[in-house]
Picture 1: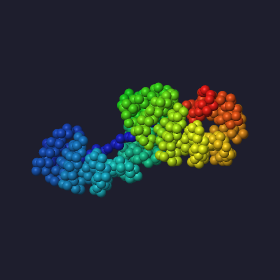
Picture 2 (picture 1 turned 90 degrees about the vertical axis):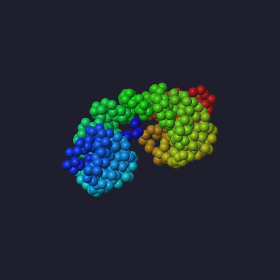
Picture 3 (picture 1 turned 45 degrees about the vertical axis):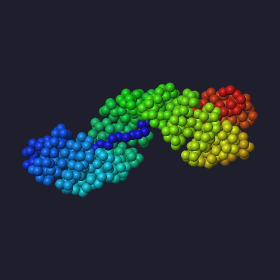
Picture 4 (picture 1 turned 180 degrees about the horizontal axis):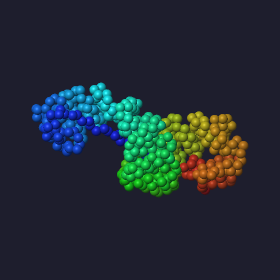
Length: 518
């Protein structure tokens, strides 16, 4: 996804003051307009001549300073623009326009607090200027005060009901507040007033996606692309939405287009890597993450996800190297520690895995995942008391976790601790998977019945459930001293389980403990 959904704010241009009628006779005034249709350097020259002439009234000198300020602002020379607006305010302190324009220069400098003060003063002098309320709303939104921004955009809309950009930006403020329905209503209105603006469709697509309405989001991104075929971020976000729908090929096509438009955008490569990994094409995923890292050598998530792709290929050493690099860049990166621990476990290095899970717990003492997996690492390191303590803690933190209950029962039995699985099911949803395995451990279902229950029309779901059925049936066989059958079932799990599953790791660890080849 593109995680960052940022849209540039639309800024109103500087407003213009008018001069006395007789002043317009002077040729300098024809070039000191404050409008961008006159060469900016010529404007500055002409306005300067008027300011220095000694012939102009205080009001008209204020206009000349203001228009020269507009020219400086258009050239990006904000400090000189502010100095000229200061003079305009000093000469004619009751002109709302001068305060508005100085505020715009402050905003261009990133000084939103001063901008807010000037916009507020402009409104005091002329409370009927819709554009000033709009600009004030932008300043509050830039400060993160979306509620005040919404109030000002609303005032701008009340003064000018056809102010399409005010609807659009109020929609952005509602979106930032998590109020997607109101955001969509405002984008609807902005699109109705100005249907040729691609950004309206794009931002409405973001709001629909935030609501989980991916089909409408895709339709809006598509419309944005039709209006602006070079709208890179629209391709990015449509790709993210296709990816969320499981349509990886379409997602990849959109990321390809985004990359063609902006070959130096690391996020498009990153998202394409995710889609290739989801398709099981880890070589292409790695190639994309290589590009991410080349463009952004400190992009920690690029190292983390390249590590995931290496791990999926069975290349644990390269995976560990990438996770380690991610941790060096971001020492509190919990996911990288968890992932490195998994790679260590796959290598049979339970001690290092335990150290990584311990680091996660120090960073996040309520991390159920880390307690659960450290428990499994302790189990296969031969530290049964520590394994049981970790699994007990995992179940305490999340009593609804059926897998934690299963492993707590497995480790408890090996530790000669009475089972409390029949009590644990009071907090577990026994209407869905993996409930059949719990029933099997309670003697209520046979392994054959569990395997039959694992069948599913969805191939991916079936693969995972058959993996579970084989692994946990093997654990039950081992409990019943049927080692040959347990070995057979563990081999099935080691062969067929996805390598990202705990059950794949457990199957290989059990086979190793039994002295059997995978």
